[in-house]
Length: 91
Image (cartoon, rainbow, N blue to C red):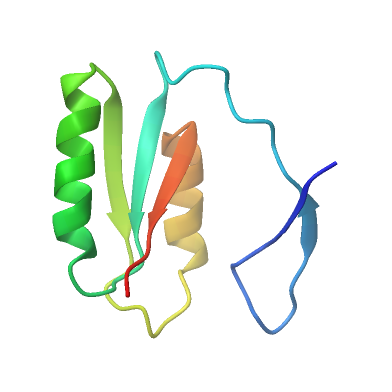
């Protein structure tokens, strides 16, 4: 079984079993989570364009800055609204 660390808090990391990815993105809503790094929005503009060209639904969510942990409200919002998430990192 693959394991991944829960990135929501570095103060108390939790290991969770990794969910099996869906066999296809058809009919799924893809969350584009911007962590607030410089130019991530430009990257996601292109990703979103390509996904929509393929008829896929997207939802944009993010943090105003990478210096803060994502709020519980923000994480709950994206978890309720999407089937899979792409997290935008840069550097």
